[in-house]
Amino acid sequence: MMPARYEPAEIIRLLTPMPEAVLVYSSETARRLGELYELTRETLDWQQTRFLCLSDKISLALPTEFQLRAQWPMEPREDLLLLLL
Image (cartoon, rainbow, N blue to C red; front, top):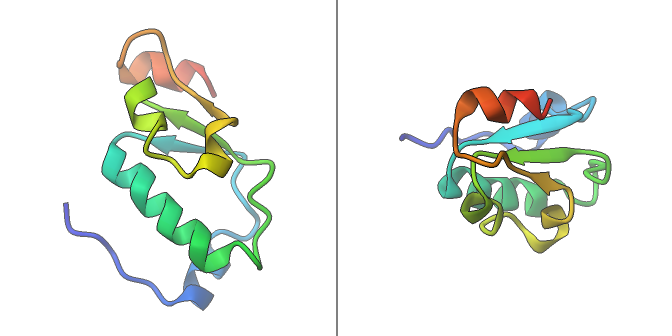
């Protein structure tokens, strides 16, 4: 995976309006969401966004502020993850 780099203003533009849900397929993605959160927490309203993780292990890599709004399927399968939408 090659991480994409964006300026904070571009991140804010791309996340406005905030998504209702974010699909999180890996612990690395969860960690990167934490970085985005730190860059934008003063500007974007993350409070209503749900984080749909492929597994409970992945949800633990999310920032603490996001973990209460995280969900995951009974098995780490994409079809079950998408049912959470």
